Amino acid sequence: MRLDGRIALVTGASGGIGQSICRVLARAGAEIAVHYNTQREVSQQLVEDLITDGFSARAFQADVVDPKACTRLVEEVAGDLGGMHFLVNNAGVAIGGEKAVDVSIDQWQHVMDVNLNSAFYMCRAGVLLMRGQGGGRIVNISSNVINTLPGGSAAYGTSKSGLVALTKILSKEEAVNGIRINAISPGMIDAGMGRGALQRRDPDVQEQFLQSIPMGRAGTSDEVAEAVLFLCSDEASYITGQTFYIDGGISLN
Image 1: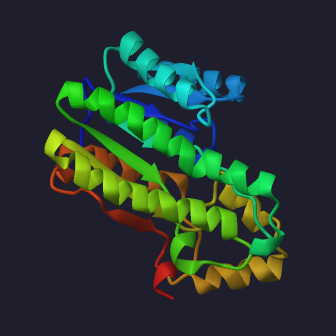
Image 2: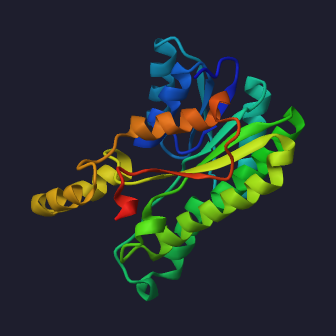
């Protein structure tokens, strides 16, 4: 699967999954727009590493909870790099543990802003650009929490469920414009937020949780990134509006 001569914007690229997505798409030939908000040094290091490995990449800063900043980000990427063929909405935050009625209004709004509203803002700006280009690909990173719905995940689960709904609606509206839009719902991934959540558990609880996964292990960020590559590639040309679960089968429990 090759993406030569095309440009990919990855939001939340400084995290574990985001970095893997950038590397996998770069290895497939895409030029990478590495988005960050506050993690400038991490993002610049990723760009340097990609360039050292012979790939093309550049960092772009934006606060994606601001709709004007999202429009500006897409315009900057397209203007500086010559277009934008792929958009991966990976920016996200997890706040959990409280019952739904105990989540503060500020916490709820923050999770919605980062996980759902930002993706809408980016999709809106991205779709408008892609229409003019004759098509494009958007991949939204959701979570298998939308199926498992564990206690204490009210804000996170609601935001990620909304992201899947947005994906389906946009995919139906934009298929006629040559824009394919899909979602990926990772399970427990040994990177970033997933690794932190796993490490906060007692060793016995960690093992018990991993054994509850049919494949008996956590996933890797590269396994998520390879799914993103597939959905961006021409090999997935007849796939839109779908949610791919990268979770070792735990959503079947």
